[in-house]
Amino acid sequence: MRAMWKGAVSFGLVTIPVRLYTATESHDIQFHQVRASDGSRIKYKRVAEADGQEVAYAEIAKGYTAPDGRTVILSDEDLASLPSKSSKEISVEKFVPAPQIDPILLDKTYYLEPDKAAVKPYALLREALRSSDRMAVVTIAVRSRMTMAVLRVRDEVIVLQTLLWPDEIRTADFDVLDGVLEPSAAEVAMADLLINSMAADFEPNDYADDYQEAVEALVERKLAGGESTVAPQVDTADAGQVVDLLAALQKSVDRAKAARAQAGGGDATSAEAASADSNSDADSVGAAAEEPATKPKTARKRSAAKKAG
Image: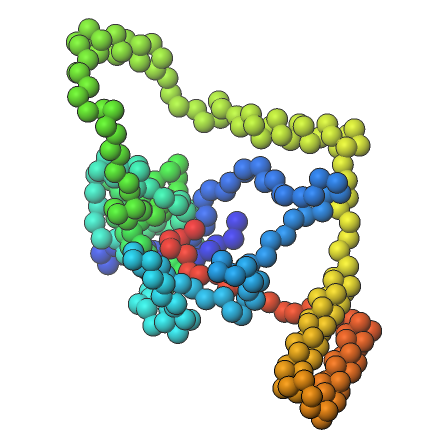
């Protein structure tokens, strides 16, 4: 595993240098959208909702939509001016009874690995958490944003688990539960009897992802039976030439129209200028067709994650 964050746990006068590792990973089956005839991958363009025009990366900005529907454009400078945290400290605020932490608040999970020189205080904190049946409520800044988290023990490792903010928890309001009659004592006793008859320890390995196994088996059968295809190679150079050629032709048409408009229908000098412009653009079209187009460089910027993840 590769550490995603390096800092220190601080409680009282004790500081424990640690490294943070992502504790979980998803094994969801990933399907791609392809053309059924040859398996060629489907790509999507970023277009403006107002007119359907494709938008270049350089023209894309971050926008916040207000409750009244108005949109505020936020520049990189605006976002840079916001408060940000760059502390490399996991600061323990308090130790609370573990049952007080509602599991619905728990979000992303990370392992904490101590430096070799800090193994002893790490083990001390681990045993204190385990023996007291408490969690340490902490604050941590990851990717420039402060968030709440808790420290708890799993096996022999201290785990940091980020918490959702209270306003991120939805309220369950179901009218169907209004006015429900309380179950009778006999019904509760029967339910308790059923629960006791089915009581057992939880063993995650007793369960399997049968959907993933079925998909993998299906794919293996199709591969073994020769039911596969190799998507055709994309000639990026030719694709670039087509785009540049169309752009040059459109530019030629636009300039010729502008020249005719200026001519007013009878100005020979303007007409000659329009012809010259068209010839010039025709030359540029030929050049675009003869020379390989240069693929534009793009840089995709990711916004700061709302929480560690």
